[in-house]
Length: 444
Image 1 (tube, rainbow, N blue to C red):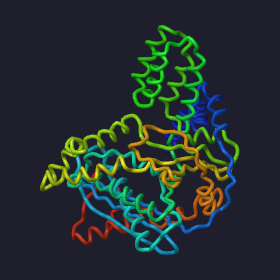
Image 2: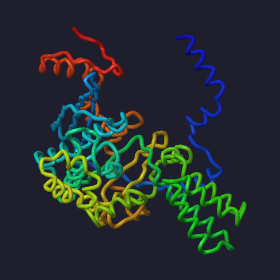
Image 3: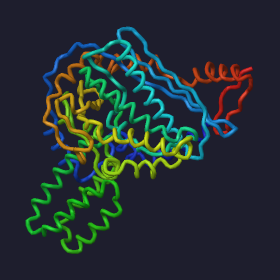
């Protein structure tokens, strides 16, 4: 072990400056000063005070084990806490899959999220909640971004149809009962705020180039949009324009490079914001590939179902009946609400929190079908921040309700290995062997 530590030390010493900069500040670029100034001008103080209300907190956990037989065992656990009452759902099952490990892990994660939707509905209906707040760990918009298509698990290929149906039902239930549903993310890699600021820089730069041909200006806007998903094609197009305009497009090139780079909003906030407050709220829809996907679902849901759920249809006993049910569930996706999202810093010494809530909370009745991409939302989020302040316990606990449900729902490695796996083997009457890629302590 000391030999490896020595090698580690040599590596860190050789790359010290770059690693220190990356770990403390993240990505840097010539646009940093401009982005920092724009961010500060789009950072708003909050006049919110703690706002007491009924709160239901929901979280989930998961475990996945590969076995030598080629099968996978998963356990997902979801819990809702309200007034000391615990609403629980647990699912355990096995499946076979030829997919990559990342796709299998993502599948189990969506099973967990699905169980969170279900346990949230259970708590609302059985508890009789009307009004108040429902807190969920993670982004609501991110859950809408999952692709509706065949899943990787044999026997569960059509699962994502049920996933979106459950999400739709939960959001509608909250709307009908006037429940403030919030997705709260402590660690977010989203960049919707940075992208909005970059768009402002793009417009400013294009306006400064007075001799720019109108057609070329439109082309540069297209290349900017392209840089987020297909940077190679974007820069190929930019090179062609630089042959005509030369170094006058240098700043535009930096803007495209920043658009193509991985720079989360939270990094910008940590680097350039020094006061508690919140970012300007943004209304999030879907542009790019996901936006086109929603258009295809809306325009031709049956064609979409037959193309993207071929394997699920083959698994079903009645393919035509499956397609009919798939079409009804797919139609719900374009009808999901747009999401209002913002970042809040409850204490300048703390890390930012991302907050998502449906746009209908602010009487904005837009659906995903109505908004391509994102736009600034002129809404007042003080009541939402007040609800978060009521559960804020300083630097140690960003939300007392979400922390408590996380502690109770968590499936730790030791719990799975020492409780669930022995119980499984006892109930089955066999000793099952894990794959060589996974090790655990063997118990007599």
